[in-house]
Length: 313
Image (cartoon, rainbow, N blue to C red):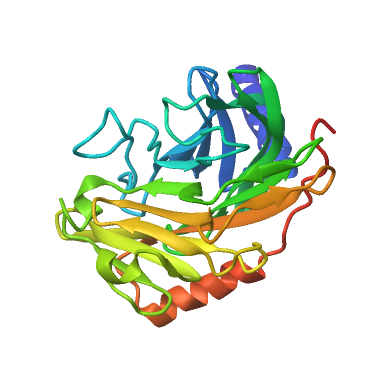
């Protein structure tokens, strides 16, 4: 009898402590082995941030759609070796003071320095990190980057993946004229228009590579089959506060899309005057109507910009 009474009292006390504690957030950042951080919605991974020193740059893989499958991949479906830098969702640039940080044969490496902060609430979670853009020939850091990678939950298992960037330098640094950079997205093979059954659309209603390539747009959507009778996709969104908005998009039928920061000409980042950028990925079910994608872009554009602070502080 005493044992039973003790068990009941213990159970009541435990329930009281749990009820009185903080609620478990719906979305969390969960550190993983080998320098990775998992974004999890109710215990199920939806994205993962990789920042290990063995990679040429930090990246996010996978990007899990509402059906539970990754909508992105690592590498080109037909040319994996020369496109080994296509790391799902990544940040880089083909010419930083003439140094390529874009492909894996370049002399530039975006090197992780530290995780500044991780946090979450009921509907969002973020990782704030510092990276150094290093010229491996001279060992000089050309840029110091503050990056905030976050997820914002939406209804029906959809979400925004948000990437906020602040690029700082101690002396002027020029981002050269190029279509390669600053953000790239490598879609799953079955979503590509060449190897799968996908469709590319932009904010002006243009369709597929022939109409979308090298055109400025607020957003570009890549949607297609990811499983039998299941269509999902990603909308890459350019923020209206970005200096080249609306960005020219570099988009191909092989499942690749990117927003080109310096397509129209070089851009110099002045000392002590950081360059601030925001990009968004709307991860969605189906192939939404253009007006629905436009509403999501407006929702993205109206989200409050976070304070990134100074590097190392």
